[in-house]
Length: 394
Image (cartoon, rainbow, N blue to C red; front, side, top):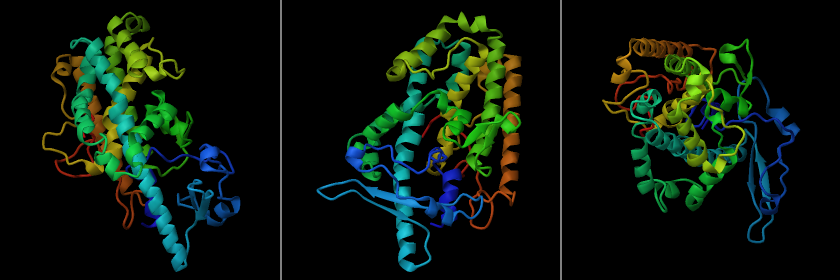
């Protein structure tokens, strides 16, 4: 794999949720030194300075480390781009190591944990605490549909002991243990919102003068650029819906079903984290809008951004904003809000097409570069590389 493609895939590939900004130098591992050996990185300032050429994201160095094992001391070595035959092959092998580990992280953490697994409490609480006639149940229903069935099938054939995941990815038999550790150490509800996720990884900073209120660390970041537009579109739809039913704080605070729903998600569904300070409160319409936008983003958009390569859209695929739910169409105000939502999604398709034709955006256009279409909302049937489903259905 070419270096430019290796880099492009971190910004526009199947796992754009892993890249982080380096904020401390020199680099130092967070792994237990008693198990993995000295934490100091072998990547030096001199190595990095030699490789930095321009503002285009490129791999500068890869450090591979083997902990002390069977009487052998810790081993670590830094690999860099090279022009000689041996160095070039070592560099390719180092990149293959990174991609192999990233594919395991992508499947176990970005995919299973962040989408399928951590959304189950939203679905269960919605069905236990909200009446089928409750306005928030009616809003969430199409975005929560099918996920529990898919998860049940996954437990039978994918994540089960000696199943497909354990036999296909590098963590092997500790795959679910790794997934559990990632939940314990990394998962936060508030960071499932795209803006907060980008900020937490150092990929954006708040800027009231920038589009969407964020300035990206890497300007040509296809997932983030398209994702932030889609996030705002979803949030506007949710806001229009919520404010129709909850015009002021007391209407949120006095809704016992709604409060019980949010309490169950926090204290039962995610009981291990019930006392964490980052949980949003639910006192105002804006609080509710933020919570619901995060849930819908996770259910619909996140899974598309990280998994479309496996998706073969069926002819009856249900896409976000494509067909109005019958209960929404009964209310003319909600119907009008949905039509605006659907129209803005169609506008996003044009925005993405325009960006894919912009020769200044090197990570989405050019010879041999795959256009970034993963967040185009609609699609034909088949494997198309685009189309955002309503819910997690694969």
